[in-house]
Length: 416
Image (cartoon, rainbow, N blue to C red; front, side):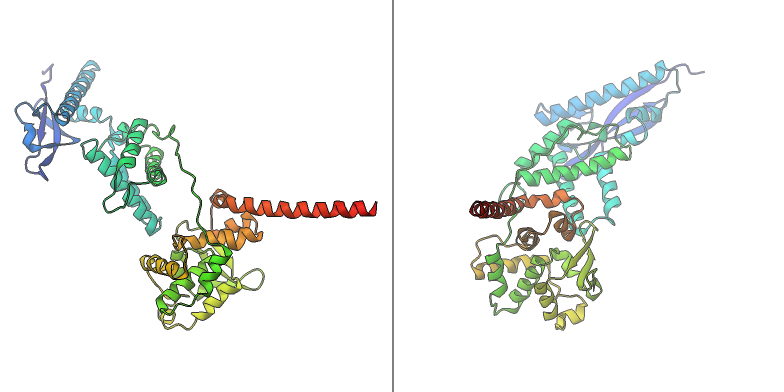
C-alpha cells in the first residue's frame, strides 16, 4: 500500500500558440503520475523563456516581475500540497488545482465577468449604452495588457489599488485619433461603468468583497449648454436654401419644444400621438436609453413641424413622423447651421433637450418635478443639473416679490 505521494510542479508554455511572440504560461501539477494543468493568465515573450529553468531570461523589470510571480505560484501550490497532506485527505493533482484556485466561482477571472456582463445586457441595454460599455471594456483590457503585462486577472485580485491604478492609467491614456487625452469626467464615466460590472460580479457571488466600497467618484461640475430665447428664435426663423439643413433644423427645434432625444424622435410614428388627459394631442413613447415612459403635450410649434412633414415623401415611405437621418449627419449638419446663423456655441442635438429644460420650461415657471417627468428622468436628481436656471428664476421671482412688497408699503403709507 502506498503511504506517500510523488509530487512535482512544472512551468511550461504553449510554443505552438504564439501570437506577436507572446504565449501563455501554464503550471503543471503532477501527483503519482497524474497531471493537472493550470492556466496562470500570464503571457511571456517566447524569446525570453528558458524551458530548462522554467523562468524568463534576463534581469529586466518584466522578467524579474514574472519570475517573482512564478516563485509565488510555486510556493502556493506546494502549500496546497502540504495542507492536503497534513489534513490526511486524499491527494490528487486535481484537488491541488482546485485548492489553488479556491474552488468554483473564486477561480473566475475579470474576462469571465466582462463576457458574462456583455451577454446579460445585450438584450436589455440600448445600443449606445452597449457601445459605451464596449469602449470601457476595451480600456480595461488595455490596462491589464499594457500595465499588468498579462491577459487576465482573477477577480480575487481586484482591490482598491487596482481601481486607483486603472483610474491613473485612464488619466494618462491618449485614445488613438482623439485630439486630446480624456477629461476627468470621461474617466469617471469609464470607472462608473467598470463599477457596475464589478458590482454585478459581487451580487452573483463571484467575488467575496466589493473593491469599490471605499471608492468615490470625483466629477468636475460642468454647465450644460443651452440656447437662449434669442438664439432659439434665430435658428427657428433663419431661411436655409439647402433642404437637408432645413430638415435637421426642424428636427432640432422639435426637440427644443418636446425634450425628446434624437434616437427617440427617429422612432416616432403616428401611433405615438394620442389624446392626453386634456383632450389635446400628446406624444406617448418610451426613452430608448432608460426604457422609462415619456408623455409630452404637443406645444403649438412642435405641432406645426409635425404638420409640415405629415405628407413628406420620406415619411410616407418610412412611416415615421420625420424623415430618418443618421446621428452622425445630424450633428455634422448642425455645425453648418450654427455657422450660418452666426452661433458661437458648439451646437449638438443634445443641446435641444437642455434648451427644452431651461429656456422653454423651467425659465417659464414649469415646476422641476414636471420637467423631470417630461424629460423621462428616472430620478429628479438628473433634472437638478439645471439648477442654474432655477436660481435665475428664483432671483426674478424674488425681484417681483420685492417690488410688490414695496408697492404695498407705499400704498399703506398713503392710506395712513
